[in-house]
Amino acid sequence: MGIVAGLDSSSDSTRIVVCDAETGAVLRQGYASHALEAAEGGGRPSDVDPQVWLRSLGEAAVGGLLEGVQAIGVSTQRNALVPLDAQGHVVRPAMTGADRRAQTSAADLVDALGGREGWAQAVGLVPQAAQPVTKLRWLRRSEPENADRTAFLMQAHDWLVWQLLGRPVRRTTDRGGASGTGYWSAATGSWRPDLVELALGRGAGLPEVIAPWEAAGTTPEGLLISAGTGETQAAAFGLGVGVGDAVVSLGVSGSVMAVHPEAVRDGGGSVTALADATGMHLPVVSTTNAVRVLRATAQMLDVDGPQALSELALKSTPGAHGLVLLPYLEGERTPHLPHTAGTLSGLRTESMRPEHLARAAFEGMLCSLADALDVLRGRGVAVRRVFLLGQAAELPAVRAVAPALFGVQVVVPQPADYAALGAARQAAWALGTAHGTLDPHRPPAWQGAAAQILEPGDDLPVGQAVRQQYGAVREQTHPGAFPA
Image (cartoon, rainbow, N blue to C red; front, top):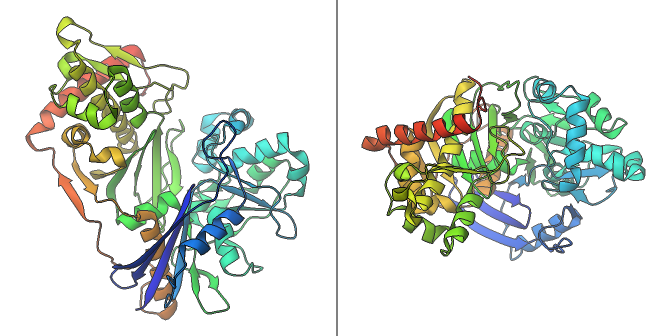
């Protein structure tokens, strides 16, 4: 069927994979970092010139990497807002990431629509500092002249696709990217321009939302460009997850997402109702604390990071001799306890040993994510197996504990550029649809990710007991945190 490419422009680099369109076999790969200036005080900047993404793309594709490629798919970091003026010029640098400047604006918007439930019903998410709708409110409040110049709104993958196509009149996006903006509803499949006006103080143009199998256009050289999508959706597509699968991501914070046929409505706002890259839905539940808990515990015990903490934890036993850590070290999103702190319970003479605290840190982190899984289950989402992602998924203590606590089969995929692979798979889908060789409603059946499979087995009752112990401490400390 040909050769396709997927490019993933993340927050700090561009990765490209060139694949056989029929099988998904990786033929070539490219990489280039983004030339970013550190933010004041260190770390990644919140404001980024979009031209950085283009230059990085060019550097990653050197050496004839894209030779013979017939279609390209684009995956990018989510929530990067690119405001354009009436001539299509960038009004200001793109606003990326969870921009702390916008936290007050998020609270303002929540109040302006009648609270968390109002937003959950309107668009399936509650504004946080990361969402484009929140950044629009910040722009209006902090840079009113730039707000007045803003005539059209794009996200990172919309802008890159538009650039690759030569900046045509038609500007497009996909359901996945649109669903994270805060002004598009996954439940209704439509924009909410009234929410743009609520945030920005005026209306602005929005891209056409096209289907996952549609092409955004063709370059003058005849290269097909697919719809593109956000990094989260592309990674799920690259992994090959389907209905009944959940993905647990272990970063500094944590997230749980699952493929579901319908949009999930959650009046409390715990679930972010994203669309996926296939025409279905991708409800997400996020936690504030995940690997940060392991790092903090390692520092407290004066051991050399999570790997050493894992070795120490495996010297303990399930339940950590009654020691329970509620890992809400930076407040928590799930449950909604933004101003709380962590809690260590069950201190007795026999439990006050380093290995038991290490075990409690792993069990607390994973029990918190199991709570997030239960939020999805409580909204009717089937979870029959869990894909475990992130560097912490490689830790022996995580692999030993997770299956019993999650209560289902756990799949630990081998490390790969899954977002770029998902973008390439989308390109193959669009190419096959355009040529009439693929059903528009059935993506190409690429081979799934190579992975290690872990079963709860005989440890399932033990895992249930650990979760009961954790749940009892959580309910005693924060009654009603998870309403029945």
